[in-house]
Length: 265
Length: 265
Image (cartoon, rainbow over all chains, first blue to last red; front, side):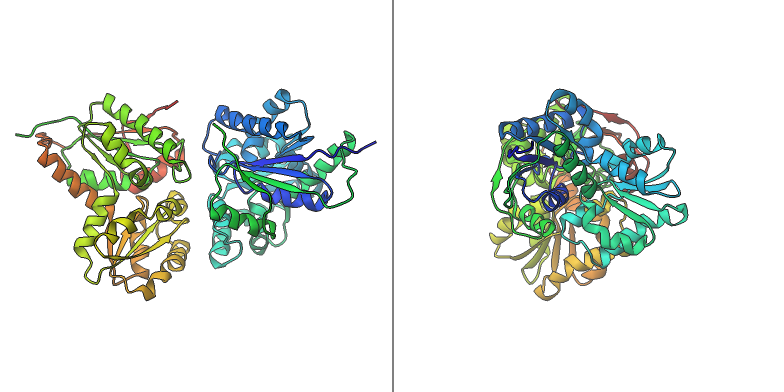
């Protein structure tokens, strides 16, 4: 028997995790969600593992105070640095963004040659490579540091973004990859631009993989809601500028309601 | 009588302040310098005034422990948020990056129409506008959020950077400005690209204005060195990645020596 109507917690260092939230609300429209974006302390990528774990713990404790039944870590940096520690520390189900994307890539690649793009921090951690190596998959990694600021500027698909994508992704052309993992939650906004450069490659949007995994975990733990009307989303940001709201609306393709500011000491 | 051979402290939230250091070492080649780049906590632009002042105080206290005789705040965010507080708190001469650029613009503009470009944080603070308004100068402000990541990627002058510059700076074309202030220490690396878009406009590189001001203040306070050989530069970064070193060398056009890592709790 299911019927747990508590919300699902979703968090990111900033607004990139909204691509994950968007997929989750499409896949699980009757669930309630609470999104936390730590926009005051973004980016996490340059911070130490200890600091990242501390920030994530503060957010999780806030989400627990809101009685969430499951948490999605919609942030590659937290997922690659702190997921195991957080899973040990807290009792509820916690889902990261990395393993669902990896699983999907393993199931889809035919020639076992996979590309991964992400921020400098994610790529330098070689997290994806380590997972894929276990499955004897040859991995090609490439950091794309301008992709996040381009998305945060709202330039999802223009001439400049296309040129940047070409510059970064041309490296993959002679690597014969058949699958590319988007290793950053901002990147799904750039899929049209990426597809124009790598037209014969399967693009793995981790957000989709994460929402499938979330549904599965909720089902297995008998935590799916029995609500039959559209769920509610509440937003909490640690810094709330006009630009945060503007880009968030562009990502979600809808105006944000129930937006709050929150402070972590 | 001069003859104070203690070093000059220079600091920034990251590596942008190296453009200021570069001008200082050209203008004052016999002085010793200590540069602090807070690369672990960059960017400051999204942080609160209290946090920015706290971070800057930690850096200044470190510089004082190294017996610096003067401090250059080579960071627009700290200069616009915290300079007055820091000047009251510490006794040695402290020079920011904003007023020297403003003074230069006032002296150079003929039609009293000045443009200012900077990060979102600097532009939203309207610091430049407030200073220039006192002199009855009409100010046009424009945030250029992609300029910093482009410089940090090392793309100082390529097709993409040129297109981004055109996109941002075209706004100034019908404003009839005769002077443009670079309100961010990263931007001097983009001068060739900026000049191609705004070819009849005086570009104010605050780094040059700051080095002139520094020489003046040292002279007035009888603090100029009597050393007659090339001075030494020591570098301290709170996070020390390959990219930090790579881009720092591109900005300074020379390999860095005496590089240290430092931690602020």
